[in-house]
Image (cartoon, rainbow, N blue to C red; front, side, top):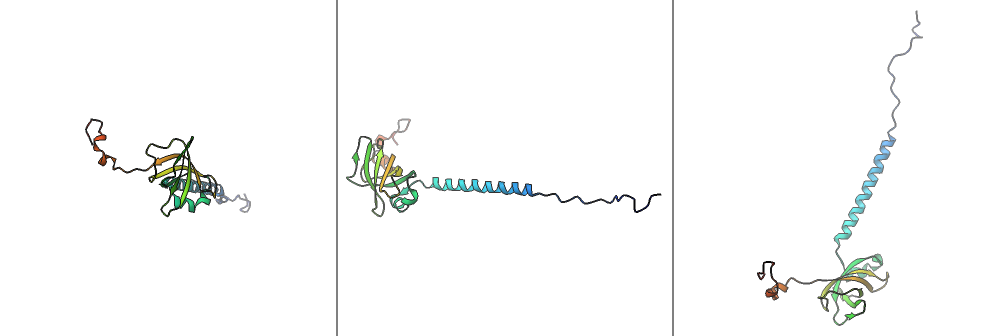
Length: 161
């Protein structure tokens, strides 16, 4: 007969705890990546929602803007437009009377003239400069043209709008 002390112990033995550090590490990395993507997307959306900087805003944040490209809005100062071989040079002013010199390369639009609001796309030539180098001029205009000249605007079917 077998001795009771010599009999094998058949009682269930608890398995050693499984380390789940790999899963936690992967979850932490995924959460960090998701947060980074969300931060980049939100910054991009916030920047794209800001259609332009006014002259006053641009001058106040000139050091931050540096030479990065953005849109600048202002009113063309009367008597400052000078057509050049490559485009036009002119001054724009903001609401508080501050001014920025714009050197535009490219053909200005036909409606471009003094005392009208414009949006120019480009960049400051340096962090301290008042010169804005632009490659595009957008002319802001009112919708009053149809009211003033109704016979000149026709619908596709030929009727006057």
